[in-house]
Image 1 (cartoon, rainbow, N blue to C red):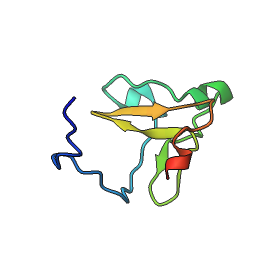
Image 2 (cartoon, rainbow, N blue to C red; image 1 turned 135 degrees about the vertical axis):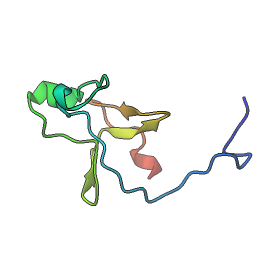
Image 3 (cartoon, helix red, strand yellow; image 1 turned 30 degrees about the horizontal axis):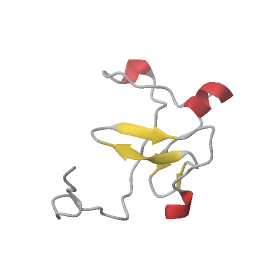
Length: 83
């Protein structure tokens, strides 16, 4: 498999400051959006993946192209040791 990062085609950039959530009301967006599994269990919309300038969810494992959130809820985050 071709390694785009190793070849310098794709770069990993650190320090992104993003707002990411899966808690937008369906009536406010025109695309399909899965529900946050933690919010589903808690029956609320309090949990966010990342809040700009504030925090990153303990279960947030990253973003996969194009806009898929990687989430490990309810398991421990396997990326935690790679910070």
